[in-house]
Image (cartoon, rainbow, N blue to C red; front, side):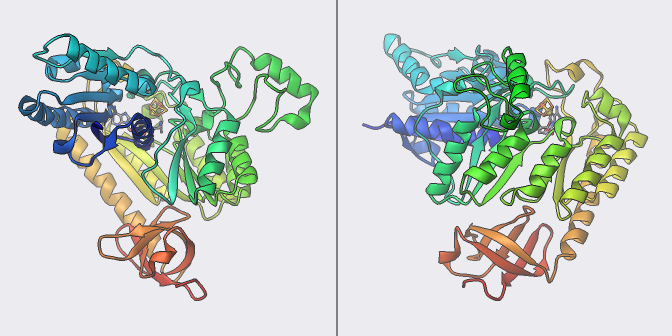
Length: 483
Ligand code: SAM
Ligand code: SF4
């Protein structure tokens, strides 16, 4: 009989996409996906390690699942993703019933790893979990991507364009858990996007920890940093016209960067909308802004995490830019893409953050006037550089700063949204919400809600904004739009 699998995802959009790949792979092996833990033969948690809180939630959930396993010893429990890599065998000590711990670089091995769990269980009567540990790979073998796939939505899809992160932000565990950067080849991404477009998807979101360094290293070693770089650069200087995304001698090394990838998707596929995340300010250049301005499909939206408005903290965080440089980038972007919507990530309570540092962050936020912001209280992560520094901002101060920034952003978001009342916005309709209204996103990534027929799901329509709530535009179909 088919095995039933339940998978819960924590953390970022990259994890959501990894979970889709996992379900696609297991589906092809005959597993049936269920949405209730008590109906599952295999329970997997795809986890996040960015903050201690994310890990504690997964530990808590798996603790509950161990109780299920005591009633039903045949149940298989697995912890996948970043927490697996960060906590390694310690997971078996805290959660003795867990059978499998597998890192982000091992997800393509999952069918084999689950077979290994079954084998171990057959060989011996286990009082505890099977304790299969797979965390040693440094880089995910992108060339072993499974052919089968699964997507949660039907209108908008995630497309992972690269894995890992080569930055060394002092607070961040991601380079440890996800390993070295490696990019998927351009042609493979173009094929995936075109297949999605043919299947009826209207939007793709390109995913990577730092999409702006796309193309640095491909699985075959080529890229703008790699053993073949020099040869390729020499070839390109002899044939300058080939300096685009599909350039390079056949089967030879390639040279492509993120703006070139955006242009290739815009010019060579029939997808209607392209988004991307995350951009690191250090690698976000004029060429990116030019590509955003020139590619019709690329939405006028940029998530550009600043983390802090204080140069002294940005230096300590090893971010590689100053507040001034960042503000200059925003000015240039707005010159090229005047209607661009902006969002950011802010960390409050980083070691050494003074009241003046905090005020510098508030000041930067007032100057940029983001459309939205994610605010995080600093959480020391073992193994990172900053974990060795005193976590010296007291918890109540972190909490206060967190609330103050949220309130500041709420005011700015509201003011910006209120200014859109009466405007017509282009909406990609995604689904019907719980109240029975249609909902979708504007090009600037704001949720738009309005009344209309089911036939509009998956369509691009014009909506006139009638009023706004905290983060949502409420409107009606603009004259001329299909009903
Ligand atoms: N790669 C992206 C970048 O650099 O902008 C972000 C990826 S990270 C998973 C998402 C966000 O989590 C970061 O931008 C940062 O604000 C936050 N974050 C990462 N480590 C953190 C930590 N130790 N404590 C609090 N927030 C953290
Ligand atoms: Fe973490 Fe910095 Fe890499 Fe983003 S760029 S994933 S914050 S190390």
